Length: 366
Image 1: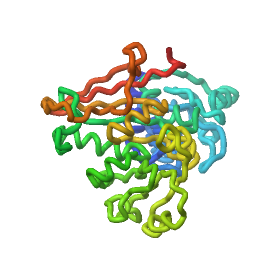
Image 2: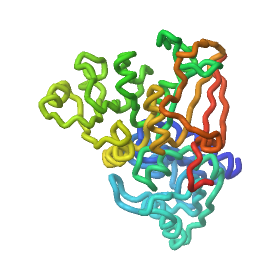
Image 3: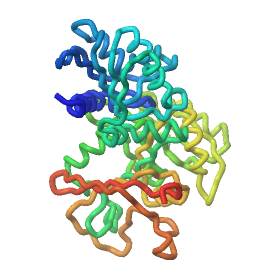
């Protein structure tokens, strides 16, 4: 096998940590000696050993003189676990092949230099694009300390997210909805607005077995979430954070008693300030958000500049209706030249439904 083939296998291992390691990166590692894999591992859960140490611990023989393939530059600092560079050096690894460099200021090339200073051959950039893509959330969060926000919606081919009566279940089929629940596991949190809570009373949980629930974030400027709503009634089972401009502590108490957390925020453009909310969530180590809001919250999120990626599920159906809602409401834009621009489209089919994913172009990317 070649370096590329071993790195591709390390990527497969890394993906097994999806949803469990946030806000850490997904990382896989493979140890090869005399043309055979003698150890492998991945970062399994936040706070536990990293991929390199798990791979070394799994070795069926001495790793002295072996090659280590790892999808991300090994850490060289003490955190919840000891530095991986230390274990690599102690075990006599002679060559390290790396996919992505680590943008974490505590690493950022220092891991590579440390290995080289101990006469270990280091190769960087094997399957770099794939390795970078795997950890787009981590790279964004470690540099900005703000969550990576994915705005997701399902619509018909005529751009409707509900009929003229407000009904929306179900626009897409089972396979597409399965993917949504996988993403609810993948990302740290799910965010919805008060309009969605009042109209649909959703659970906002992951319904797949052996997966975790996202933190539920409700944007509720005037604190109108019903105490009897599903998100409040199940707050002790799945963490619920209500973000509001309401400062009435007596009103807060009813939600706190049910297990909810309250974040108080100032108002901007008639709604809670989403930029300040992102800063507060970043402080809580929430590295990513699946935004499943209605058209009002979607517009506010775009207008605030917090959206990093858009996921549009398109079903082969037509609703029609002048009053049927589209995915993004609000005031809208006056001129086509001011449109929010999307780049790097990716298209995936789920039975008859189509998912289009694109990154939101920022000023820094232009």
